[in-house]
Length: 596
Image 1: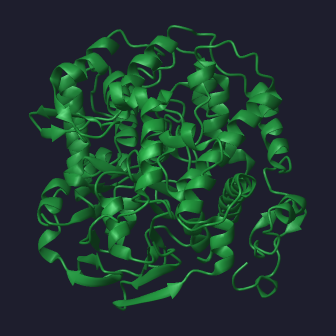
Image 2 (image 1 turned 30 degrees about the vertical axis):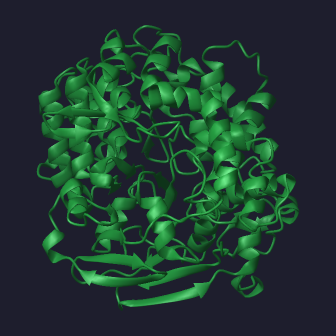
């Protein structure tokens, strides 16, 4: 198999498509996926508006995309419209493997500019063509995908077309989404309705794949996914007392059993990948059509909104899928509206437990059809700017928190606060140990647990491998797989690569104006819950924990990497004059080589 060492550059403003080599030094230092995507994004001018034509949108693969067991994934990488920070959002399904087969020796697609009218980008045999798609504008995600029956599609729906700041990129008729942060919003701003992969998934590496499929199927993560997929998360979170309920007012939900894994099994018509040793999600048929609800759906649209009817929750998820908008932010936005209504901040009456009202408001958000829908289309922080209520729903870097309430697992608060893309639970999940075990972790140990998991995930998402494969990749960080694919990397080199990528993204965010204040504890979490009024997190203790995290990373007290760290990672020449580092401002652009 040839080593992928090129990238397709697409300028939608001019209609030009070029193929260029990725600098060898970048491949050595960042591998692919998240790493290479972040390095290209760092080349973009600072303070570029996320919905401007100058913003970069990358569809990135890694050297292992299409080969590893588990679900294949691609990364959508851009500057987030929701947060203004770095964004990497991942999606599975049929699109990643077929994109890998369509791109040939290219690791991804680098998109800039904006088309005058809607277009699709068609990819096959290592080439891309821009094709008119005016007739597709206005179609939902499922209908758009269905227009290309012999291809794999990544597209936007009405939410992306109307500039909802958390619009997704949908595939497989809305079953899979690059979900968080608004990558679909960037597509909409560029008039890019869809990317269509017309090739077949790549072949090769069958021997190592077969061995790892057996390891994955026998691992804890593999057995859990085979039995329950991520839907069991709602049952776990409820039992552990970390299930965000009724707009973060409680940490458990009396209706959890009605929206959990057993209810899904009862209603399921099958699994996504029936013949796979580790099959995908559960297919559920409802009045909004067939959907494949993930763990976030019953948590945010169920417990979060006080809805204990599985069919109603699945229907709400299907509406979000069809409109192509992030269920986590959408659910939190509706929860904010209910709490704001109860407090008298808005002049509409809402209540928890009402699926019909939630659906109506989600539709308003997707179309920006009402003043409230327009405000909530900018996320909870956008609504807070207009109406107040900052203490109602927790956010980090303007991204709403998701699956776990960290008031039941303090280390999870650190994971949320230091996530590079905002309030994300996927960068590190210490809650899965801490919520059920009296770990006795010291602040130093808490910091190390979060930072080390963040680095491992950064590496996996650069390979790109599903993060659920972490358990079977941990022994050598993926070195055996890379050797089989023609890449020579030691496990020690790969471990450092994950840290280097995390540091690169930190430099990007610092240059965009983020700092320690953006890593602090959300005010909502300093207060207790209805069931535990004294259960809030202590901001002073959290400040100490954040200090330990910065020390572990080799950053100063303001969250800036030191020159010593940059030298150790081999990226001391990377920061430009606009990027603050611990020992002074970044170097001038004249001192920075074209490719570090």
